[in-house]
Length: 328
Image 1 (cartoon, rainbow, N blue to C red):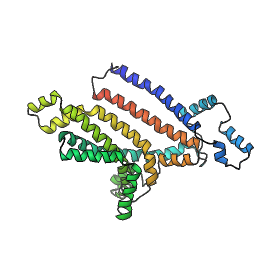
Image 2 (image 1 turned 30 degrees about the vertical axis):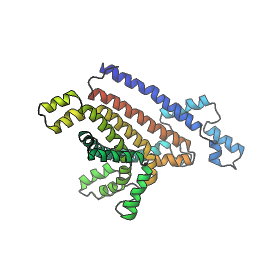
Image 3 (image 1 turned 45 degrees about the horizontal axis):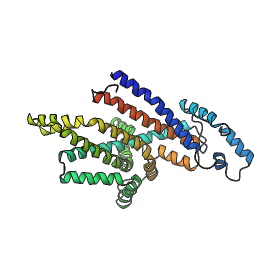
Image 4 (image 1 turned 120 degrees about the horizontal axis):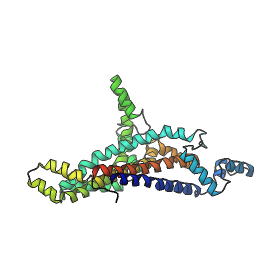
C-alpha cells in the first residue's frame, strides 16, 4: 500500500512539471514589447531585428518554439545570457548556492522562533504569552520582507554600526569547516554577520505562519482522549506535550514548513535585492530589467521545479510520519 502511494506521488510530478513548463512559456511570451527590439533598441534596422529573431527562434511558430524550449530545459541547455554573453547554467551554478544558503538560514531562524512560540501558545492558551505570540505572528505576516530589511539596515547598520548592510562573505558551511581545520573562525564570523540580517528578515514571515499552524494543530491534539489518558496516568507534562501532542501535530506542520521554504526560495528575490545578496533573485531582477529571456526562463524554471520537488519530499515524509497513510 505504501509502495502504491509513493509511486502515485512520483507520477504526479510529471504532469505538474509539464504544467510548470507551459506556464513559464506562456508568461514569457506574454511579456509586453518585442524581445529583439528591446535588445537592439528602437533605432535598430529591420534587418538587424529579423536577424535577432531568427537567432533566438522567435520567427518560428509557437508550437516549434515550445518544443525547442522544452528540449532546452530538459537537457539543461539554457543557452547564453543575452547581456553577459556567458552560459546561463554557469550563472545559475554560481548564484544558486547563495540563494540556497540564505533560504536555509531563513528556515533555521523561522523554526527556532516558531516551534517554541507555537507550543507555548497552545499549552498556555488565552494567557498573556499566547496573546503576545499571536500579536507577533500577525506583525510577521503583515510586515513585508523588504520593509523589515530596510528597518534592520537602518537600526543595526546605520545607527548602531553592528552589522554589514550588504554583500556575502565566504560560503557559511565552507567557512565553518575551515574554522574547525585551522582553529581560526574569523572567516565564519564575517560570513555569519553578513547573512544574519537578510536571513532573519526572510525567516520572520515564515516563523509567523509556522507558529500559528503549530498552535492550531497543538490545540486540536491536546484536546484528544489519549492526551487526557496520558495525564491521568501521571506522565510528566513535558513528555505529554513533546512526545504525544507535538509529535502527532507534526504532519500539517511539515506541510507548512515545506511551503514556507519554497516561498523563501522564491521570496528571496526581494531580500537579495534589499541586501545586495548575490543569488538567483538578483539575477532574475537584472534579467527582467534587461529582457534577458534565457536567464529569466532558466531561473524561474529552477525555482518552480524545486518547489515541486519539495512538495514531493513532504508527501513521501508523510509515509514515515503517519503509518495510516495508504494509496487513498
